[in-house]
Amino acid sequence: MPRPGYPLTILEFQKRFATEEACREYLFASRWPEGFICPGCAASDVGAETRRHLWICTGCGRQTSITAGTVMHKTRMPLRTWFWAAYLVSTFHPGISAKQLQRQLGISRHETAWAMLHKLRAAMVAPERTLLKDAVEIDEFFLGGYEEGLKGGRQRGKKVLCGVAIEVRGRGSGRLRLAVLPDASGPSLLAFTQATTQPGAVVHTDGLQSYRALAKHGYDHRRLTQTDVAAGDQLLPRAHRAISNLKAWMHGTHRGVSPEHLAAYLDEFVFRHNRRRTPMAGFQTLLGLGLARDPITYREIIDQAA
Ligand SMILES: [Zn+2]
Image (cartoon, rainbow, N blue to C red; front, side, top):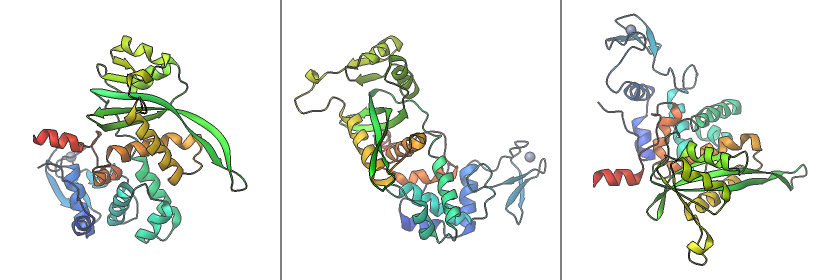
């Protein structure tokens, strides 16, 4: 039995997860698509489910909670509320605030909604680990520079240097990676490239000298200068599009983000970008049910079907 899929519409979602029982069945099927396997002794024979929803292994007697290892573990919140919270956080563009979440789900305390949001957001960090491949645009840029001033005005704050890596998919963009960079030196940009992009990939960059080392480290490096593109065209169009979308999102949703929190927002932006065609797929990941890999892109689905 394969892992269960996810509902594509809000009506499907509402129908499918109408009861606590339905949520529990979904969790069970997501965690043990091949049937129950005891984490203690690997036996597959499962006894009764207790009233507290623990599964007892007939081999060793170990009790396993359906929510162990997920964000829902040991919380008092109903599973349905968690499911809806994950749905809203993953599908709300450009992101949902704790206050909105509290209102939408009728959560009585703001602190509870804030803590839920925080847990769900934390799941946006981990899964983005597979390397970009084939052809990738890499660039560096400054982010921030504005923080809320004491009198409500905007003050010039510290700008933070960031790196962007984005896959070239025909005329469009594939997966995205973003990171805060210590500086624009050769070693920093090489480290960023190695952390994001598979060796052997074609890497497009601008003429910055710091990228020169890429060719020596297994990348098919293509340096572009303004003479390589038609007048008015951008050197690295996908990277620049991602940067301007990021800036608009940061400006609209997260005004006055301090540099310490910037990395988390970059992760959230990457998470949303990489699921922009299937935002509902994110709900499993946020609950802690996701596999540690990127979701299949629309393009990959089309390619596989062809
Ligand atoms: Zn066991």
